[in-house]
Image (cartoon, rainbow, N blue to C red; front, side, top):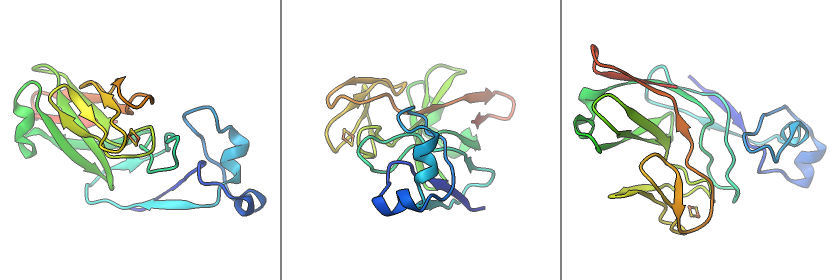
Length: 170
Ligand code: FES
């Protein structure tokens, strides 16, 4: 499956003149006109079945951006770290890095590991997540808590099925 996502942050004078396509932007700073201006695309290819990336979110610095939505099913058996509350597993969603956090016996949080500041890839630390680029810090639910000022990490709806021991994300 191949999905094309247009990036409203990578506009050039040329691309503005060559209007090619339309995109929605999650930040609200790039209205329909800005989205329509973009002609650059990037392709997201993946190894997971049934994964979809629908819209992009914003990265203020022009780096990689978190998908605005994803769609995938994850078997807990594949990620032993999720057997324990507080466990964190890294998951690849069509090339976009995600983290799943087990927050209780029956609840999980899925978030993008792409930092909303300039697109660094955040890593799990004992208190949540840390971006190695400029040290933005996030709690285990993806909320910005310190360091480089920026927004929260993008999160995705996550449903736990105790019978199948799987998560439906998106
Ligand atoms: S990219 Fe700057 S803090 Fe993450």
